[in-house]
Length: 490
Ligand code: SAM
Ligand code: SF4
Ligand code: F3S
Image (cartoon, rainbow, N blue to C red; front, top):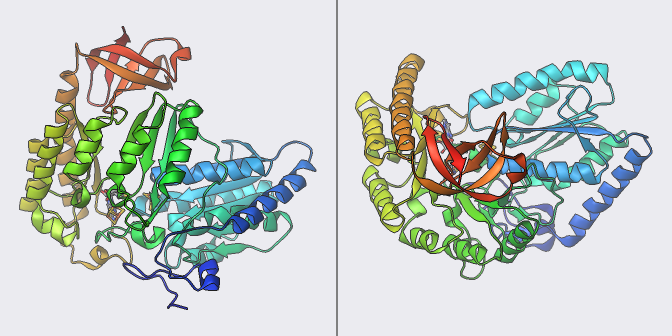
């Protein structure tokens, strides 16, 4: 057996079934059919217990963090549904509460802990209530112990690697078992075929890979989500076909860095070819994807996007900083010049491309001049929208140990200046849409409006019949502001 521990780049903890089989750990493997069948059996047993309770029990699943967590929550809801639960948004009424947590910034963690603290009241009023915590935060060093000792009303803690074993854990609790803490680092596996209960009937998440190998110096994701694992293309295509067949009109392929898709699989498949294969799935739907890491994006991806008629004209390409010195300290492995070259290439391949990005201000040691380089990159690229973050030190990451001489107030000032600049650019770019016509997907309602999205993902508010939700329509843009466009049906 190989050394079983959570390590950097390559070797990961050996999952039990791999230890048994004596296989190498850094090859992606699917959870065996026998293991999945056991979980289905646990779901049936839980459903039987719940059927004996008269009215269907209620479950509340609350999700923090990124689209990956949203996709995981759809699986949790799917499993709960099979186990006989109906969904509720009312914490006090729920028989089971599952909080799917995020660890990416401290603020999100504080919110989770605050909300979990409040659940002492619901548990007191309803002593049989089962409170479960899962997701990235639970995989952080020391977190499970903290929950065990300080949040005694929580019965189940499990990490993202063992999400597929949720039925087993919940059944044990329904049968009166003890509190469970399952945060073993058994990554390197993918569980296919779990039931899903999706939030929308128009838009669907489709994870193509899990984990991250990049270890950007500020980021906790590789530590809590483990190494990159790609789903087999045939599994991705089967699911895309199923979603298109079920009438989904907007499918987003998910991964922390989709551009490294397939590197852990045998055979020659990369993300560009996966995109082409999903594009060939019959049906009228839009394909989106996120996220692309600039170090792995390039001409091959842009050409594939340009040639796939279903692929949205939208690229989310996080730049994080406009300073090459800071990018190097962030371990991003590209320079400001590399990034600007990529943007040029992408826009040459797709002149109507909508470009969005992520940026961090206040990285340890970022000087005023380096921050000015971020502003000048934003001016130069003119993103359509930007997700802006103030650096949050994450324990165990290299950046958390770097000297950080600038005050919170200084960082806030930079953050505000950046947001103001981007708001001006977004407002100008949106104003330029007025008078133009677009094909949009009507995806929901919001007060008196229908909401819809252009191919580039821009929000267009419209007046119209809610029966149009789920259909593609042509609209003329009649108004705009910083965050949205307004239009009328043609
Ligand atoms: N994998 C994606 C990529 O590399 O672009 C990003 C995923 S991360 C969940 C989303 C964004 O959160 C990052 O792009 C980064 O801007 C931000 N982020 C991650 N760690 C952070 C930290 N410690 N402090 C502030 N922002 C952070
Ligand atoms: Fe985090 Fe970097 Fe991985 Fe994105 S690529 S998840 S920012 S380590
Ligand atoms: Fe948060 Fe985990 Fe996503 S840390 S951003 S939920 S991968």
